[in-house]
Length: 551
Image (cartoon, rainbow, N blue to C red; front, top):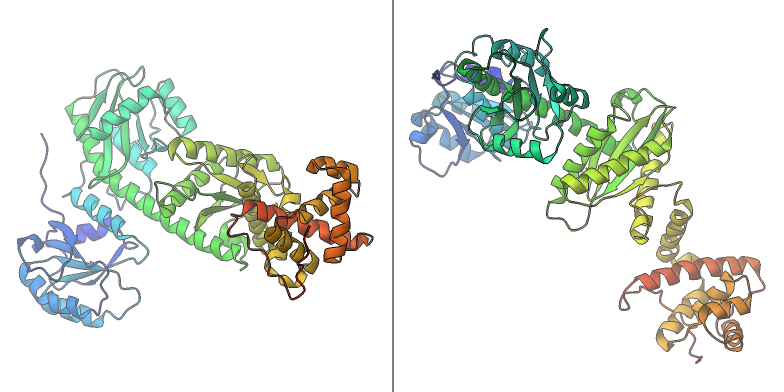
């Protein structure tokens, strides 16, 4: 038999949300009135029964918005319990005065909490009605999920595990004499449920079920399971191991009641995790841009750090912002095998991770981590990533350099798709240097040789091959026989072209310095020209001494 409780009071809602999520600015009618639900406030609609006892979310409205202040008397007449809004540092005096006169409470929601999470928190709080179930500690009193798992285990009479939607174990009970089998032991030790087809079928059944389900084929010992939700949002699941006497209807009811309390815990855990991740992400964003911080700000106590950069695909069915957060979650989860204080931030199409490294951690471990994340992203997110790894540095001031190197590695991998999807700066140092030199030469006309500029323009306009011929000559260290074979032309033709290069463009091949600069610029600019479309090769404009001679 299910017990029906009255709607929770405003005081109860505030207690369940916690002071870090919402604070009371005004309560002219007190906090004991019941809250019947919540909805988004639309100041253009007329007041009606839907507003009675409801918390109305003033999404996107400033505390001093005239439309909001003008709507308060009508909301008071409709019996609204409260309005909730983000103050964002604005003056709330006029709002508090108008709300007090109208008899409507005012809740200030933390600016950093997304409205979708406010909606989920209120849905979970509204589902936790009346007094807590007997034996279940309140959400405000329980310090962590492990204490909740032990409390639920004592009520249900079976060993408990709490999981997130990715089937990762968040907490488990450890009361003496609990039943255990191989599946429970392996799951706790690995902190992850095996993701084979058998278990995936069980989870699909669980996600569709409206309440507690009984599972007889999960392992040697049967189980009870229930989803944890906030409204329609799936937050995780609770599992109870059955041993000896079957768990009856009372145990099922206790497990169902526990799901409501667990929802608040999981929402608070998610909120705390997201707030911490956002704070660390902002610190990391500033650090990568060149601002320095103390190691204590990042909770880092080892002497080396490296930047791992993971590039998201340019085209994906998932928006880059969402996909970036999903990849950041993967990096954070798998980085725990390497370090306990990794930080991630999403910048455009790249996810950056700052990985502290103990002295005994070899560089290959970072590459292995990147390979694991790429494999997992391909399996679970259906996306293919590239990963670049910067140098390990000992000083926070050098972290931007490690980031720049990781970016350079990604550029090399993009330019050379035949390479593996993971590389460190040590693996591609020469290619990275050449890429940087290419950018410098292309973007700075002051260091472009006039002879090279004229040669490239002449070849483009006249269909000649002087630049290619000279590069082959320099590549072969002046051996015309080898160079001619590489271009598949007769040696006499090749020698003629080299002579014409000197005559037309004033090239002095007897000067070692000029040979070096010619080789470097021709190699980089011809490579760029081959990679660019014919209509957008971006060749430098020839000056007043452009050559008009024929080949």
